[in-house]
Image 1: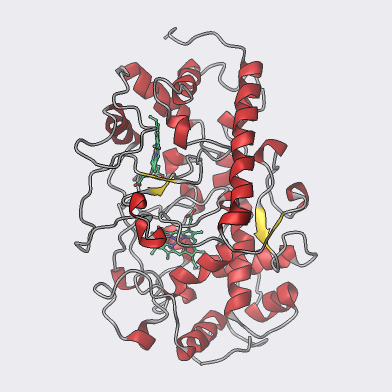
Image 2: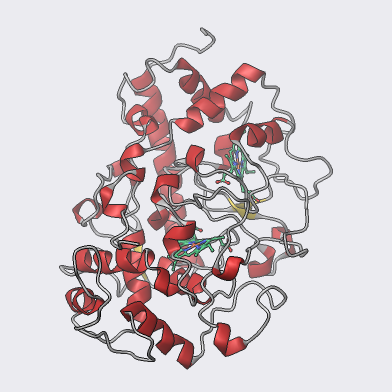
Length: 418
Ligand code: HEC
Ligand code: HEC
């Protein structure tokens, strides 16, 4: 297959690097003004207890004031966050952890491969669990950008009555018909949650130093809490901060593409298909994928209508996307551009998981999206005029965004024995 155009890897990488970096900066400055979240840039992301190198080209990510990543206690907070993330006691029936729907081996997407995730009691949600690689860099969270920080988001699944359902006793409402998010727990729900986390059937706010619930290493939450925060009193604030610290360590920077982007001439040497796929992906005239999937994480962090036909969700409603949050009709059926890092591992695709494979995704884009969709983004190219080889080359490129050092990082293993 000799169809790729000869280019100098190094100079091409450099051009892309500058291009990505410029866009990244643009989106960072936006957050400070657009969302009223007090934020401070992580002063030195290379110097945080993150288990992966962060190249300069990735830029710095922003952390809310009050939950720094460079505190002496940050490693202990990450450790507590890891315990919470993989703890099924966070769900009201002990069935579901964050890790049930966000598995490191799948780039922290749902490993079970269904279109939309199942949570508490086998209840099915209406959206596909996104991959969480480099989630620290996002400026909006969830498909419609309902949340602005990882801290704000972390409690949502815990109290969402389709996911972990800790508000179930408080509302007594039917989880399907009562709508999607119910993030406001009753006081008893919160105390039960703490008790369950601590391994006890009690309403409590205090971690018990003698709790029988211990991790593989024999540690109690009491020890974890004391190490992380110097207190044994649970609070939602400390729980959400700890989870967010752990999530900010989900750094994926060592894919084959990264080697290419860092100027390693061997990265695509034996994979000219991927190189050609990359050229097509960044070809503004032909595909303009990079029009939306731009920046270090292949997302402009904006909301677009990429041409998906409007179809009812599993509960028969219509998911109208960003407009539900912004109330701006121009945002109807717009969803946040997803990152494409580790995308080959996170099937199925799109906000409702309607595309089972990357082949299906490409067949969709090849025709400029579905027919008769109003409000399609003008950045979509109407017909891509790609042959089968071109399409498989783009997929080959997307596969080089897989980062095994990330998905197999032992820092992301569950600390629990079951
Ligand atoms: C039942 C499956 C399920 C569980 C359990 C779950 N999630 Fe999710 N997660 C999802 C789905 C689905 C979405 C997308 C929600 C949306 O767009 O409204 C999501 C979105 C997210 C996002 C936003 C990512 C982004 O870039 O927009 C983060 C972060 C996240 N989850 C972390 C967590 C944490 C932390 C927990 C545990 C406290 C958790 N999730 C539990 C399914 C789940
Ligand atoms: C107009 C902006 C835009 C353009 C151009 C665009 N995308 Fe997307 N892409 C999106 C949005 C927005 C989504 C999520 C849409 C949804 O779920 O409703 C998405 C979803 C995807 C997904 C699914 C990812 C996941 O985790 O579910 C893949 C893969 C993808 N795009 C690849 C491409 C490729 C390849 C091209 C070029 C052929 C391209 N995109 C062009 C905006 C765009």
